[in-house]
Length: 181
Image (cartoon, rainbow, N blue to C red):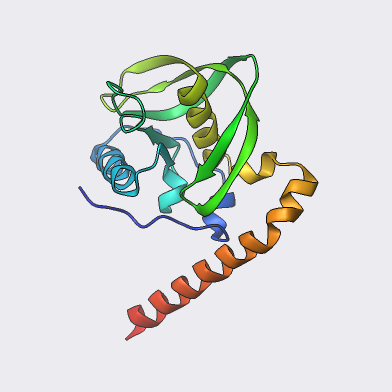
């Protein structure tokens, strides 16, 4: 398992829609394994493939460090088929470090997709798991949690977002320089 570099706000891949995975193969299994390892190392709750620069419709969730007994899960080609209720809660994102804001999400959701063994699955979730799954599905559609904020709230964090984006650009430039040497 490999810890993958997380794409940071400002990277164009975060605004792109990930494509369906037509066939479950070893590359997808390895991607899921690496994403779970990355999520564990970063102490995050969820991770979508485009956050690690891969435009495939898969995300992983691991709530085990906040809810005892929870097992990590991966969902390939996830589809939100039902939602109910509304809940407001704080969200953050590995791709937008240091920013945490309240976001309105559905309280309960039902997702369909494929698990890592290729079996069709249906997952019913509520509260935190529901929130994380909706957040990750947004990523796969090129949407960030900050897009759910009011215009006023977004303006309040714009300078922080610009700093994150500038820092990400500096890191990208320095890695390009290292690669060319």
